[in-house]
Image 1 (cartoon, rainbow, N blue to C red):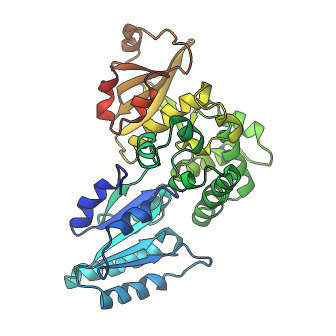
Image 2: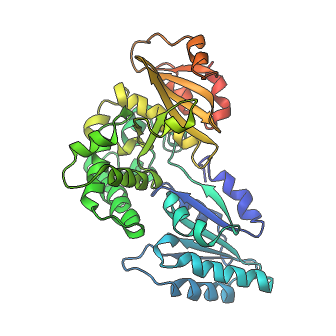
Image 3: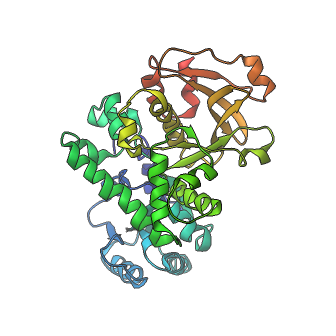
Length: 383
């Protein structure tokens, strides 16, 4: 509960406003730990669907009845990794509507992996019945505070808390990253929830992009570099699944003409530095690894805030590395430089392109201060 983001859960735990409370976020960032730290003995019933064999929808019904019998009337029932239960949202809807009809007081919390949960169930069956709590990857400021991690540690090991107890044994830490996070996300979370005709192509796409943090690469070029049959539409679809799992996020070029934005070449940001390929993150605070570090932080502190979108801009050899927009309007522009400072564009040049907002340089001198900022409203501290 020393994280910034779990603090927001306390208010909802104390007063759910008669809504199903949903926590979504990537794997292994502490969702379960946070919610169980709030739980009190005798008042909470915890159920996980993250089992070796696929559970059935009966699990929800059985555990709900158990909880009603053993808990006080305002007890809390927690379903972890609910998206792995077939028809989970239909069953939850049924029992929740029955609870409302009979005047029940039970509270229900649902935990799941990133937007995979949101698409598969919440938007289909539970509209109007839930409230979202977003749980992003750990930021540098958080791992620095909790694990006394240095910036070099964070660039290499990223925002997975468990890995900091393993990092002195690099082989073991990398094995945990590969098997407990990457393979589980690709091989279980995504494949169990979505139709993926070419699982090998999905994995190739992840590993290819993991070597290209903060680089602009078209879908056509990616397709040409991967082995196996496929087309651009397939790659676009698989990239969207990786985005929903919050392991790879494509961002697009800012344009005042909104319809042009999604037609641009994506710049690929990896929201947790640990997921950058080891051959690349050896660079630590240099080149594209450094730029990705800045982009990943912007993604994490705006995770779940749908009014924000991270973009970039380039034209005729001029470039802005990141633009943070709110409802399509630029709020902050960022130039990232890991080495010797380069000349920044004039404010007049930005204004002519519709980028009329504060313009900040992030470099070796101020990057730690930048990474300790946990809300987009505080970037003026860097002026």
